[in-house]
Amino acid sequence: MATPRVAAGALFFDEAGRVLLVKPTYKNGWDIPGGYVEPGESPRAACIREVREELGISVNPSSLLVIDWAPAEKEGDKMLFVFDAGTLSDQAHAEIRFTDGELTESAFVAHDDLDRYLPGRLSRRLRTAINAKQHEAAVYAEHGEVPA
Image (tube, rainbow, N blue to C red; front, side, top):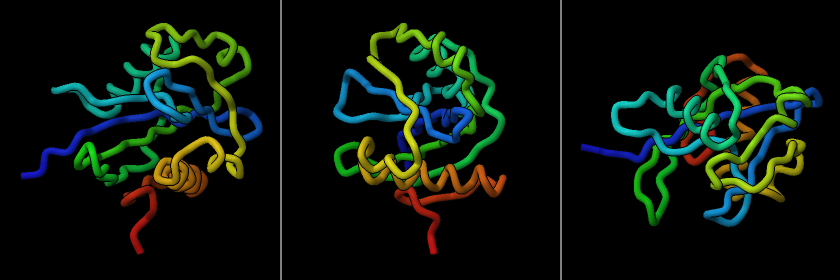
């Protein structure tokens, strides 16, 4: 029986439609706010908890955008959930506090620039999530892309 690791992340946008990325202290590159789901916790509850822990703000994700089957060579099977966290106002962005020491900075990044900040698998997943938001329909993906 498969026992994948499960993680959940929040996809925030600004008024210009750019995506909020965060810079973790524990790995190279950038990511979206989120993390692993704890035993007995739903992916949505994990998303809410992780945003509160990492950014010091409350979020109420409006909908699921992507479920991504994305096994990693060194980590095994993974199921990754990306939730729509809506538009983050300038004021709310200014209120972000890196309370748990896992993150050092945040930035809004245009869709066309995602590849400069993210590994390919995450860039693909976010593009799929952005497309899902535009079409107002959650999607299933594998390695960040909707299967053909």
